[in-house]
Image (cartoon, rainbow, N blue to C red; front, side, top):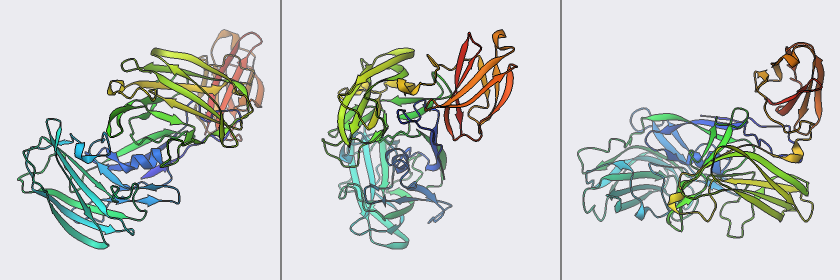
Length: 473
C-alpha cells in the first residue's frame, strides 16, 4: 500500500489552488476481488487521507495465504469503520437491497473463522442479502464480538429460511455494529477468513470467501480539493483536458435519498462539511481571499442525462460566516466552453469556497444518473495579473519535460522567433521570477531553485506574444 502526495506550494492569496487540475494525490492498495466497494474509498475521498486504509489484505490467515482485516479508525472528531461489500447500496436499509453476485442455491446459513479485538460496546457485523427478479427475499445480519486473539469459528443459521431459490446474493462484513452506533467505535479490528454458505453443494463463483484473490487499485483526487463521496468512479482524472495534461471529471451516480434510490451529483469543493452535521450545517475550509469584486472563470464540457444541469457555486465568508453566495448553471456542451461568474460582495471577504456539482441538488430522479461534467483551467481573473492577456497554452511553445524539477528545454516554432525573442516567467502571484533575451529557437532554462507549483511563461518579440503554463514539482 502506498499513499503519494503531490501538492502545490506557490499559491497566491486570490487564487484557487490547483484550479487547472494538473496536480493529483494518488493512492494504490490491494482490493478483495469481486468486492469493488470498500471503506478504502471513504478513507481516501471522504476522510481526505486522515486514516490509513482500513480494508486490507493480511497474511494472518486461517487457511491459505491471506485473510481480510477490517479496522474502525477514529479521531476526536471522526470515525471510519472498515467494510467490504459487492454492491453499492441504494439506501441504508439492507432489507430492501437487491442484486449482487449470481447464485441460485438455497443456503441454510453461513460459517467462517474470525479474530476480533473489540472496542468497548462494539461488535463486528456479517451480512448476507438474497434477492430474486429484483425483489429482496431474505436479509440476514449477524454479529461477532468479544476479544478473540486466536481464530474462532462462527456458524449462523438463516432464520426464517429462504422461501425460494435466489438469483443473486450480497455479502458484506463491517468492523463495527453501525446499526447500533452510526460510525462504530474506534479500535475495533476484525480479521475474517474461509467464509462459506452452508447446506449447499457449491458456493457463488464470485464469492472469494477465502480472500485469496486480490487486485491492485489506484485512486486519484485533485490536490487541495475535497470530496465527501466514497465512490471511485464518481470523481476521476481525465486526459480530455482543455489545457495541460488533465481535467476533473464528475459523474452523477445512483445513491439514496430518504432511504430510496436517487441521483446524486459527483461533487468536489475547496471546503467540506463536518460529519453528522444538521440541515443548518455550514461548509468549513476554503482558502484566503480578499477580493470584494472579481470574476470566477473556467472551461467546461457537459453531457447531461435527461434535461439535467450542472452547477458551480461560489461562497464568500468573513470570520467564519457566509456573506455572499453566487453560482451558475451549466448546460450541454460537446466541446469545451468558456464561462465566467462575476460577483460583487457587499463587504470584503477573508475566505472563498468553490464547489462543483455534476447535477443540481433538486434533480434527484434516477433519470439524471450518468450526467458527466468536465472542468479545467478554473481561476479568478485577478490571478492572471502577469501581463499575459487572454492566457492560453500555445502549441508554438514546447516545454520538455513538463512537469519538471525546474530544469527544462524551451523550443519555439515560427520564423518570427528564429533570432531574438524575450522570455518572461511569472509565478501564480503574478511576480516575475525569470527574464531573459534568447537568440535561438531552442534553449535550456533552470528554475530548480523555485518552489514547486504553477508558473506562466510569456514569449514575445515586440509583435507576437505566446504563453504557456509550466509545472514544477
